[in-house]
Amino acid sequence: GAMAGDEVEGERIRVEGRVFDGDGNPVPDAMIEIWQADAQGRFAHPADGRGSNAGFTGFGRTGTGTDPQNRFSFDTIKPASAAQGEAPHLNVIVFMRGLLTHVYTRIYFADEEAANAADPVLSSVPEARRSTLVAARDGNTYRLDIHMQGDRETVFFDV
Image 1 (cartoon, one colour):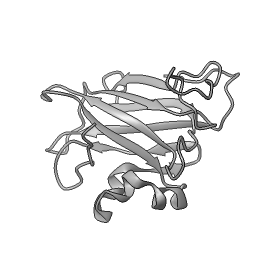
Image 2 (tube, rainbow, N blue to C red; image 1 turned 180 degrees about the vertical axis):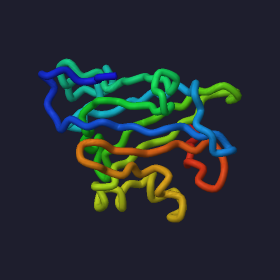
Image 3 (cartoon, rainbow, N blue to C red; image 1 turned 120 degrees about the horizontal axis):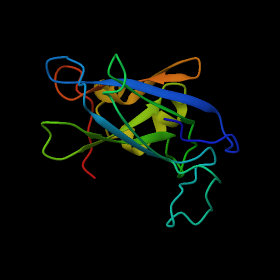
């Protein structure tokens, strides 16, 4: 769904992907939530005293079951870095059948190479697995699939 009204500043992007189970099958009933900073790196949250970007909550939720290819998608704005040394990213929570509790991950942007290289969280991930967190850009769309298990398992974080 759309997360930003016309009045919200920032580069309009779409973030999309699919969730795959351990057998490599798309999950038809996963739910994805994202939480992100705005184009100035501010969060729409009382704990962020810098003031919120009017009309932008930074929160989105969508299921994979409404799309014929079981994709999730968010029409949003590209976030800026929210803290010194941190690369722009989306915080992601995945809910699905068979998970006892939800899992946390992040989506980084492939065209933010310098910021990604300096990001402390991404740098803490073994280099061979970092690509599971970086969305490829095609025009204004970033694509990243989430793999719950298997060879290309997405890196998940304890929060």
